[in-house]
Amino acid sequence: MAKINWGRLIVGTLIAAIIMFVTDGFVHGTIAEADWKAVYAGLRAAEPERHGPSMAYFVVFELGRAFTSMLFYALMRTRFGAGPKTAVLAAIAGWIAFSLTGPAQFIPLGFFSNALWLKVGAIHLATSIIATIAGAALYRDEARPAVA
Image (cartoon, rainbow, N blue to C red; front, side, top):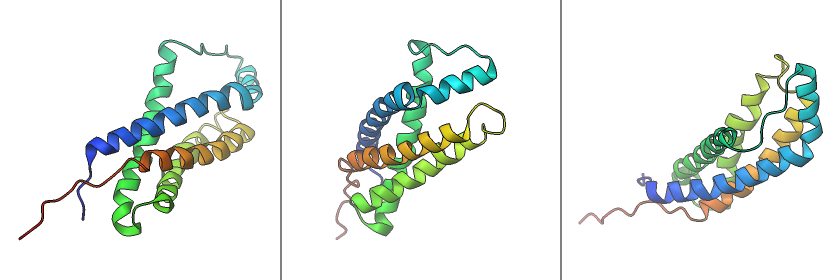
């Protein structure tokens, strides 16, 4: 089994996280904006600020989402081989962990609607795949010295 190249894993994670952060900002600020307004109205809550310290939480979320997908990719390469097919499988696994199952727990509490969950989940699947393929393109396993 090849050793994980942590340096390349971190670089791939950063690339994937940037893609996820930018696309997520676009999705929530445009495509899902009306859904979020309905959630806030239903909760009688003020909309949160979209700058400053609140952005740190989104950065942490996207870094976690990207790191999970990239770690899955690094681990899956030994079984499925390097390349986009494995990156897609890793992205789907990361998507299930972060975007599919995570928000589902907030639906019965009223913090997320079914429509918002389905809309964002579908878009996250596409962006997770694109971002993980981009990050995986930079990943190589750590070279092992030849055994004599």
